[in-house]
Image (tube, rainbow, N blue to C red; front, side, top):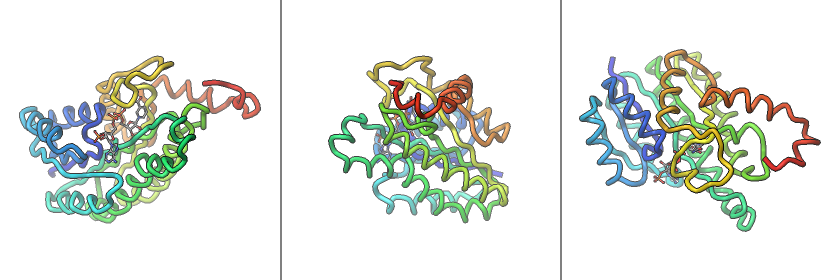
Amino acid sequence: MSETWIILGASSAMARALARSLAADGHELLLCGRDADDLARDAADLRLRGAALAEVMAFDTRDPDSFAPIIARAEAAGGVVNVAVFAGSMPPQEAVESDPALLDGVVTDNFAAAARFLLHIAPLMESRGAGSVVGVGSVAGDRGRIGNYVYGAAKAGFHTFLSGHRNRMARKGVHVMTVKPGFVDTAMTWGLEGMFLVASPSDVARDIRKGLRKKRNVIYTPIFWTLIMLIIRMIPERIFKKLQI
Ligand SMILES: NC(=O)c1ccc[n+]([C@@H]2O[C@H](COP(=O)([O-])OP(=O)(O)OC[C@H]3O[C@@H](n4cnc5c(N)ncnc54)[C@H](OP(=O)(O)O)[C@@H]3O)[C@@H](O)[C@H]2O)c1
């Protein structure tokens, strides 16, 4: 049976790496994002790499009207429908503190838009009785830190949504996997200070493919973040509130 992958935020370096891996296996790809020209170049490349189909579709987290055409296109493709969510934004915490109105956009980009899209497409995925959702959250969602707790709170909301969505969709044969990357070398982190153990986008894509094969529910990528975040989550609040991490 054919498999269509809807990739939301397809211009993310991690999304591009996953798309290359999926193309090599002959999947059908819908590259969804804001920059059509940029994604069209990717689509041409992905077809050469083996994608059965690679099409560009407009997607803007701030424009819910952009969601329905993507869902309709996936429905028309037939077969199994999969969704990978990479879209997200991370303005500096200080910028949000200076202008709290920015919070709405952070919540929309990292949580609300993806959750809304996934709720819209859920009946289609359920009707096909198979498929996967890959939701990219972040280790930042595991604990609110002084440096980026607005972004972290949005990711935490997305994690909780995905947990419930997994609970719902598993009953109809749909696998929902939460992906929590640590630091990854992408446009989002370019020039940021204090990063360590930085992974490449292809490392993340490889871990996602592995997690999908093994039907994992939640993965940290690279895997050592499982231990780092276990320790960070265990630090008592009275100590954590004094830390600058
Ligand atoms: N890099 C890291 O260290 C790291 C760590 C943990 C989690 N993450 C998460 O990983 C995901 C991918 O991020 P990345 O690191 O690859 O950074 P990125 O290159 O900045 O990717 C972010 C993606 O989100 C898209 N996006 C932003 N605002 C959007 C909007 N209003 N509508 C539609 N798309 C929008 C961007 O599209 P445009 O190209 O149009 O801007 C881009 O495709 C994000 O969810 C991020 O939070 C990243």
